Length: 223
Length: 223
DNA sequence: GTATTATGATAGTATTACTATTAAATTAAT
DNA sequence: ATTAATTTAATAGTAATACTATCATAATAC
Image (cartoon, rainbow over all chains, first blue to last red; front, side, top):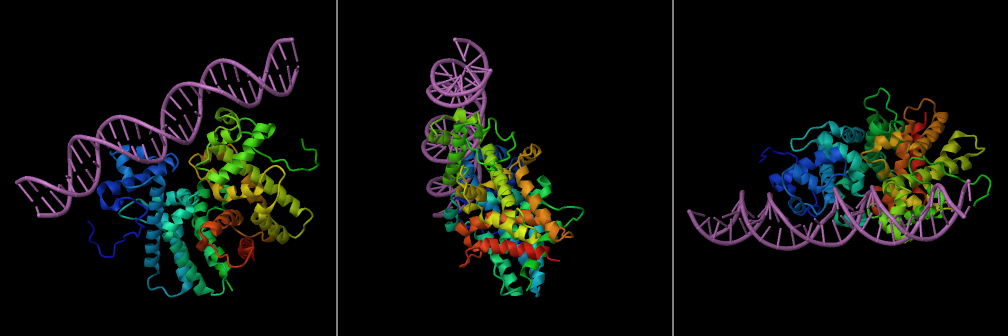
């Protein structure tokens, strides 16, 4: 039980799961351990069977929580975007200038992996988001999923940041493209820097991803 | 047999395949029909069994060409990037100004789906590139594949365009990030415009993807 | 004309992605 | 405290996937 006031509770579409994993110890361990396993094995080699063994349960039991492993991935990404929204809201509370709010948003997106959370390992979840999250919508049944609202939390982040951009420059034509390009780019660059470094420009600069995307964004929307 | 002078021949790493599919009718039909099937079914539901039935052959025979379906996908992406390089070279022959060459490069990347090729259906291949190509490197064995040089053709395109950018602005710090962000972005926006339109800004503008990425790129590298 | 290579036909295995059934353990309701 | 309801464990089973192996036949090369 958690009685802390204003603690984070994710907003997750109920059609993503069969039984709410946050409603039981077993459900919570499904989420917790799946993050570890997906990070270790990759989404392709991750199976409910392996997860069941790890949490000392059975395949059939996990299937009572999630229809399949893709839904679990959608749950994790949805959780992530809900949590990102919360972090952005926190960071931008009482901040007036739109440019500062935009910088903060980009900072949250690029530094998310270094944040902490009492419930799950954000660092590993962030790695999963960078490597696997596009597999939650780069699939043939994307339209059906979208109709069910499974990508709502992601689209909301894009919409929120686009609104900030339009505050800065109301005549800018491509706010949503710019934001979705930036978000996908951040995840790709994070991944490239580890595995395909010739697609990045890392050098000595620690914060090159934040620097690049703030620069790119601010120049794009400058009047 | 094709005796046309200067016709396009892709440059593809020999470790991607077991037996060169371009060396036989069967091999060519594997490539041809796999493009149709992956586009129809999506990469996840595409199997060598289904392909074998389609081309009136057997699973075992297809396995003599490719170790698995991931390698086939890597072959297709590699073919694509080799072909893109050729198209860019064609389009930029005798063009002096670097800015014009950059615009041409972005034009090829965004309009590739409308090009024609005698050997295979570029329109469908482009759809596959947009939807599936990231699955060829967003995998756990990326480092092994990279060591074998499987992503060489892609990295070369990024490198070539980065060089043009550095001609325009030799002090620009992030050419590779900008180019890889643009390329992945183009594919994503192409896909989003069909399936997740709230992540784009389509309006009436036909050429919004080309417009957006040229604007973004030129503003980013402007001094 | 023989040797080589490519393909077809068939079979088989381990794993995956589930579904179904029943029993035991927990939890909630009265 | 007892009963009822729900959750989980245990087990079994199926169809499909992702291969590997073997052998026969067809095509091609020398």
